[in-house]
Each structure stands twice: as C-alpha cells, then as structure tokens.
Length: 421
Image (cartoon, rainbow, N blue to C red; front, side):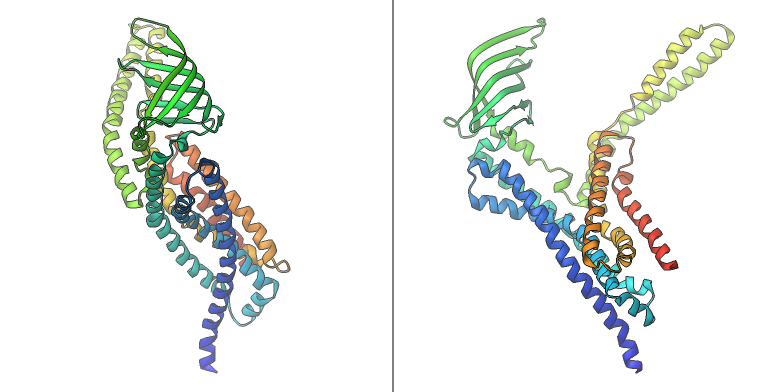
C-alpha cells in the first residue's frame, strides 16, 4: 500500500500533464493554422500574383514558420490549459483528485511545469530560429526581386530607398497610377516628379527597374528659384535594384537575437548620450539664468514682460528634449523577445482557475474563453508597441510587459478566490 501511495501522485501528475498536452496540441494546431493561412494570404497578395515560382514561394513559407510557431505556443498554452482543466472539472475529476488529498496547488503543479518548458521552447524559437528564418526570407526575397522587379510595386504604398521615395496609387499588371517620386537631381537639388501613370519597362539593364512615366510634372527646388516646374508627356526613370536591396539587407531588431539587440541598444545609447548630456547642461544653465532674472525682477532692474519671455524660451527648450526613435524601437523589440514567450506563464495562472469554473461545459467554453483572452492580449501588446514607438517618454519595458503583468495579476486574484471556495 505504501508503494502505491508513493506512486499515485506521479500517476496523477502524468494524467493531468497528458490531458494538458492533448489540449495543447489541439490548440496549437488551431493557432498554427490561423497564422499559417494569414501568411499564405499575405504572400498571395504580394508574391503569388506576380508569377513567382512555386518552389520559391514554398521556401518563403518555410522561412516564415519560426514566427508562426513563436506566436502559436503562448496562445496554445492559454487555450490548452482552459480546455484541459475545463474537461477535468466537467467530469468531476478535479473533485476526485481533491478528495484523494490533492490540493489545487498540487493539481496546478504539472501544468505550471509544462508551461515553463513551453515558454523556454518558445523563447528558443523566437531568439534563434526566428532571426535566422527572417534573414533567409529577406535573402531569398532579394534574389526574387532581381528576377522580378514588380515585387516592389505595391498599390497605395510609400517606399524609401537610399535617396529616393516612391509613392504609388492603384496598381494593375505593369501599370502604376498617380505615381510620385521624391529624389535628388544631379546638382543635389530636391525634386518632386508626379505622373498620371507609370509603366514597368523590362528591357534594358537587368540591375535596374525601368519605369516609363506619362503626363509628367517635375518640381525642382533649385537655389534662387521658388518655383521651377517642367512638364513632359513621356519620361524614362530608372531605379537601381542595388538601392532597394541595400535597404532590405540591413538587419533590424527582429532579425537579431536578444543578445545582439542588447549590444545594438548599448551602442545606440552611447551615441545618443552626448546629445542628451549637452541638452541637460544647456537646460541647467538656462535654469540658473532664470534665477538671476528673478532677482533682477525683484530689484526692479528687469521688467516682468522680459522675464516672462525668457521663461517661455526655457520651457520651449525643455520641450525640445532630444530623442532617439531608433533606440526606442530597439528597446521595444528587445523586451518583446522575452514578453511573448513568457506570456505562457501568465496565461496558465489565469486559465487554470477559470477552467475550474467550467463544471459542465468542458472543453468547448474553455476554447471560446481562450480565444477572447488571446485577442485581448494581442490587442494590448500591439497597442503598447504602437504607443511606445510613438512616445519616447513611455517605458519600453512597461509597454511590452504590461499585458503579461495584467493577466498574471488577474490570474492570481481569481486563483486566490477559487482557493477560498
């Protein structure tokens, strides 16, 4: 009997863990399918319509798999926990386990341990496989771009390459409507070229994108001339593919590991620090100057109007605090590389007690609640990233970790409430 009593907890843990793994697998398949289809639709819109070989499309999809897996694991952990615990609760197996001496904490233990494992797996995929897959995706895309320049001609888009900016309207096969080019002429003057339509010309140098512009108006900002316009019925404009691929070749924080992103952040912070210190030093001098001005006003040697104008200048300088948006984006991406994988831990603390309330509905309601929570989390994460990238005074750590913290706190509150019942 003693041997059986020692073995029973292990059997119970294996049973609970097995139930969780089954539900996790079903949930993972669902989210993987959703993100996979979304990627297919994006490729269908951007690539499949432009006669790209099927084998190249399949390679692009393969290189996209790490990002799909990295996103699917945390959400599948959430829904899998809700489904597994909901099923155990609906069949009164939770009641049976508690009657056998298992507390809710012990029942929760195997789920928490598996969530730790899945968080680690998601982090590895997100930190190692995802950057490699994204780099391979970009490398293959550049090869396809040389073979088919039309890949870069997207409707209603703004593309920036080196010194050129292209703005497109509607796009039909080989034709761009209401086309605008912002570039620099041979004398270094900025100019704006607008055309009613632009047609892709395939003959000529294979290393350029040839465009035939129709009904062209050119505005050049030559020195000494306020308005210098010229018109043409037809104009030929070439874009070097090298300029496009240079922009695509530069790796961003998404294509880097967490360690590499951290190093880039330190370099950017070191470059930005002198600008910030100069601003602080100037601000301190202006503040001291305000003190002297206040004394002059008190003595009557300076008018209040003059002092007020100086105060406004100081406030204006305060508002002109230097910022580095690139540094902010890198910091956001750095914290995002950790917050998404470890969202699985926050999810299980919320999903486990919620699943206990599903006494009759089992997996069905758990699946629906999981989708609702996943959608809310994703909206908060995207909102935090967008807000953090636009406001330099927002903490990147808070912007990326706030959804995890909120769901963890909500889970602890619900868990504690369930423990008291």
